[in-house]
Amino acid sequence: MGDVDKKAFNEYFKSYTGKTITINDNYNGFIYESSKQTDLNDKVIAAAKDTQLRKRLAINAFRTINDLWNAEVAARNFITLCEDLLGKRSSCIGVGPCSVADAISQGKMYSITQHDRD
Image 1 (cartoon, rainbow, N blue to C red):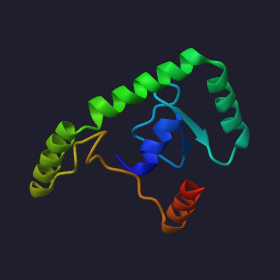
Image 2: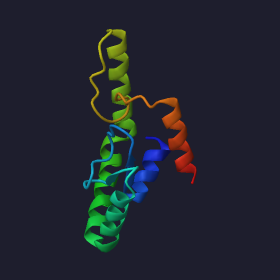
Image 3: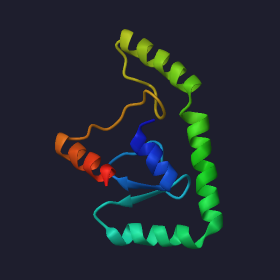
């Protein structure tokens, strides 16, 4: 899992930049539309006011990392991916390590990395 997703899990939030495979809105974090400041504000306020919500998000985020994004799953998925590539098949891994990710345009990637530095 990349540093951006780990940081998002730690903060319970992720900016919506397309398909996300690790954060499920209101389950293990929040997804907000980056162009809508009020969307982020509403979710920050909700999390600040609700201790149980923060605990639930934290527990579910931990479980997602622990159960899905671990070395055993990564190794198993890597073997599956190699077998798919050697067999000239499309990858059958839906989520987790080695799953297909959406392409991010170069310009958008630059804005994402700049945002993470702030």
